[in-house]
Length: 332
Image (cartoon, rainbow, N blue to C red):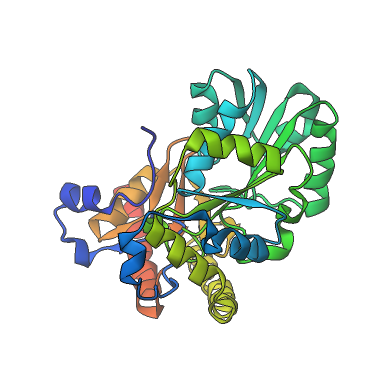
């Protein structure tokens, strides 16, 4: 099993601090979460049904011709490598490691490289896997750039897989609308922007034949009835979505300013900021001792900061960074 953010209970045990005393910034999940609506009893009592309208609501929200509901984009990540024969696969790095892991587990030849390296050697791969915007590196690609890549790959039977888990704050940059074309595959998730990580709800956007094959491999009831009900309601709540995008843009800018004030240059998107620093491991521990959990990456040495939930959380991070960095200077 690969390491992921959000391991708050483990941190609480390791540092001897109760859960309710932590500020968890270790994921890119919004703290401004969509407020779940009550779930009718009938949804709990019946098996999930594909005719509940979820896919139509999702296709409208993502501007995608057709979608398949899955148990989070992780389910799509694991099934896609099983849908084609042994291939040469280029995966963006640093990035969400489950992509490379899933393709390797399925027997494909995988090269993890930077976005610049991948784009400079497209002909070397049958499949390119990009994360847009990238997690944690924050790389962005223009829709036209991605569509040009897709055309190069599709011309020889290749795939372009684009993980858009963090795309919701800026939907105009999505390429989901073009997924009726063979070889262009987009993954979406409700975990980050909507704050519904526990619902494990996501969508695979692709041409109908590939979606049918994926559905056969996944089997029935891949997404629970309650998750389907909540997903449909969240995707249809356009008023909340507009408010959330405004809140996230402001919160992302505020976080960037605080990090920069402490000499931590960052990049990312409105849901997180990523900082490369040789002091990453020591700073991660110093913040954890103060009850703030951030995501540590060993290669390259770096930290990812999720959004504090409010002004008090941002101030707490500001103060903890000042103390932690001063601690490092005094120790040196």
